[in-house]
Length: 68
Image (tube, rainbow, N blue to C red; front, side, top):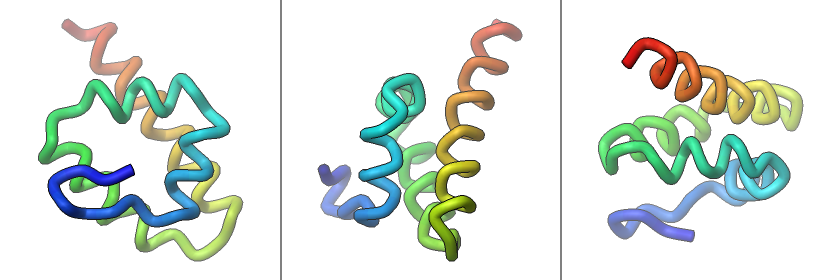
């Protein structure tokens, strides 16, 4: 997977692949939002941190939909 020439970190891509709702949420983001997520994912140091981060992507997108 790549977006704008920036490859997804493998751990981020693998975690997204295990959470289809988070993957859908990521796909619905603007290119700038996706890049911010990619940059933030590079700061995760453990599998648990990455898992929690990917779960937060899903939650933040669903919260945004509730407020529109």
